[in-house]
Image (cartoon, rainbow, N blue to C red; front, side):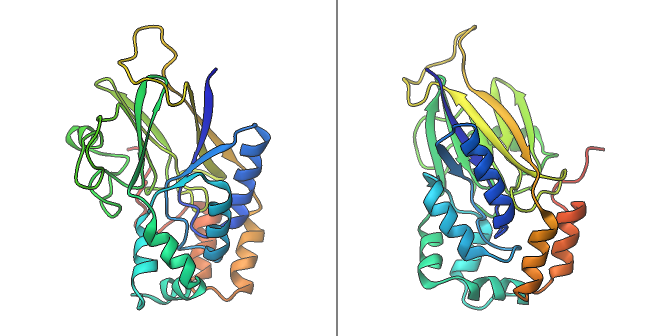
Length: 256
């Protein structure tokens, strides 16, 4: 019988959105959750987001915000410093201990999940990318390690969902739970297929992997109010991002 795995990404300290997504996942009867990183940063409750992630997600990979917020005692701007200082020593150690990637076999396909790309968590592959960048996402590197190369890759980082199938390869982006820049609501992905089965090349008519995009409404104004009450720096920029999906230098521009 097929199993289901929820894939979430880029919570960014927005526990109002995260709790709404977790409730939706639970209502669907899904018990396995993989988190693609950037648990902290941008939003006001990084430590609480970490606690929820550790409680509910069976695997979490490391995002770029997770790395530099936890690694660097002195941050480059006030909001990042505020986020760093809000975390406990254990929170920061946990973030730095997270793996680079997570691989699994589903529906006869090798699936690889990471935050930004196969290069490292700081190397971004945007919605508009070259064929070379697309092919590269399915290769093994020092960051991913050796092993079977994937035919399905999922990532986060760019805060916008998309699905691309080409050359027999499937690339999807799970979007951002806590800071979406493509549309209102908190997105996540459901993968469905036989889990941990024997890997093989999927034959015509085989079920393979089903990829479903879900978007959950949540109380944006309540989240903004929490950020204000806690005295988070740059709260007005945060409010604009949540209300209108407008971000300075957006990584996910609309298709031209």
